[in-house]
Every structure is written in structure tokens, then in C-alpha cells.
Amino acid sequence: MNKRVGILTGGGDCPGLNAVIRGAVRRALRSGWECVGILEGWRGLIDAKYMPLDLEAIRGILPRGGTILRTSRTNPSKRPEGMNLIRQNYNALGLDSLIAIGGDDTQGVASKLHEAGLKVIGVPKTIDNDLSGTDCTFGFDTAVNIVTEAIDRLHTTAEAHNRVMVVEVMGRHAGWIAVASGIAGGADVVLIPEKPINLDEVVKLLQHRVERGRTFSIMVVAEGAKFADGVQVTLSSKIDEFGHEQQGGIGTVLAAEIEKRTGLETRAVILGHVQRGGSPSAFDRILATRFGVIAMEQVIKGESGKMVALHGGDIVTVPFSEALTNRKVDPELYRVAETFFG
Image (cartoon, rainbow, N blue to C red; front, side, top):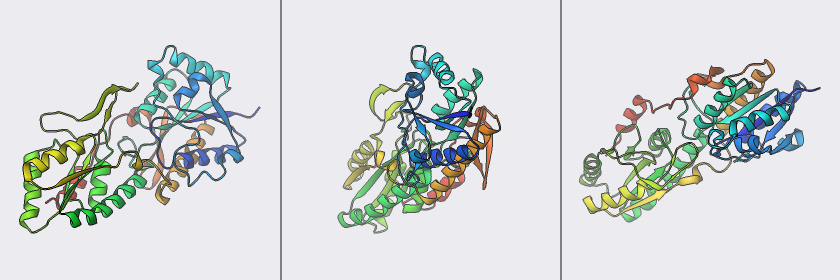
């Protein structure tokens, strides 16, 4: 009998997921492995929802955003008998291994399954680029390109109306998208979770631009940025199964406060899920494909408890223990961005 591997995508979607699936399936079929797609993340292994992954299933998916397997923010540890049901369905499906594609929450569940004796290989996915163990995650490059294009467009309307534009981007724990797009888009201020927001300093930077004769400003803020008193703005008090609040709204709060303190007309633009959507960039397609192929090669070798990762130009593997902490913004990168503040 052919050996069988399951593939799932968990957590938020992002461009490049389908490229990973395609790469893993193509590599599996070359070695005589059968692939099963687990639907809707960990929920699919709890409810035994799956689909065959053959050549027809992956045809034409390379440039597609999202994931053909769909996804969810399901935490088996929070479901009655969740982990036991996963183990039961893993065995009932005749899986020899599982490839789990996702961020720190998904990799955390994968690590627990490995400790329980199941064979699991992880693939790092998050547009936030905040997963440790890898130099870069696929989806990040596409998100930065999307935000940079939005900032380019906002420059013209901000200048036409003499406005301050506050652009809110994703970034729960780390401000990689904010810093990278801020540098690429020529932002005048960038605010990130790693540095508490000092409103007095922000106001000084904006007023300095006015004194220099600049009638507009562009500010980029990560959704997870906090004020100096530790207060974090959230859209609601609802907590998901991994203990995360629904972040967002910091841009609107900042815009109101800036207009109040400076008298400058200020508008907030929340890019939200548009950062996750659409076709992946060439860089993300290539990185995701490499991840998928190498992850499947680890499966074929009988490896488990590891996540594929980008180190320099090489694809390597790291143990889950190295992959489950948040990767903060490089201070040197932020220092470069600060050169252009105000």
C-alpha cells in the first residue's frame, strides 16, 4: 500500500498557501505517496473532513490566494476530546505523517501532536513575519507590496487635501509589515508593538513637518501597537480559542487624538484583510514552493517534530521548540525607518 500524508492549513489565510500544497503534493506523487487534504485546519481532523489531493486537485492553484483546503482558528485543546479525536482520525485515515502549514498557534498544536507520538512536519506561514526559527515567512512579501501600493496612493490624496493619513496595518505582536512598508512607502512616522506609542513625540514629528512647509504626512501603525501606559485598542473583548483578542482600531483612535492635538485634518485608513488577499508575489510563490517540497522530503525521510525554515538562502529544518516564540522587528531595521521620521 502507498504511504499517506495529510496536509492542512490552519489560522489566518495568506498568499502562498496553495503554492505550499502544490509543492508538497507534486513531490509526494513523485515518490509514490498519497496525499489527503484536511479541510478547515485542525477542525477537519476533529470532524474527519478531508479531500483527496491529486494532480487534478492542485491544477492551476499556484497563483491563487487563500487556500483550497480552507482554514479555521480551531484549537483542539479547547474542544471536548479535541486532541483525542485528532489522534483517532489521524489513525483512521491511515496517515503516516502530517504537514501542518500555519503560524505559531498551528505549530504549537503540531508540536503537541509530535510529543504525543504522531509524525508531524511544520511549514511556517504568517503575513506578520513574526515566527521565530525562520528568516522569513511566505505571505509577508505580498502583504508588504500591497501596503506599499496603498501608501503610494495615499500620498497623492493626502497632499491634495493637506491631511495626515494614519494607515493601520496588521501586526499583532511584531511590526514587520509596518516597518517594511513604511520604509518602502516613504512614511513619516511608523509605530509598532515593540515600541510604546509616545503621543507627544508623534505630535512633535508632525509639527516639525508643518514647520518645514510640508502640508501632509503619512503615518503607519501596526494594529498591535500600544500606548505608553500599556493600553491596547481592540475591536471587541471577544477572545478566540487561542486566547487572542480581535485587534484593530488603533488607527482611528490615533487619528482623532492627532487632529485634536494639532488641528491638522487627519483620516484613518484600515487596510485590514486586504493585506491577506490576492495572488502571491513571485518571491512568496518560490519560497512557499520550496517549503512544500522540502517539507514533503522530510516526511519521506521519516522525520517529525521539525519545521522547515529559511536561513539565508537555504531551506533548513528547526525543532518546534525553536519556532514557537515571537520574532520581533530587528532594531537596526527600525533605526533605518526612524531616519525619515518627521
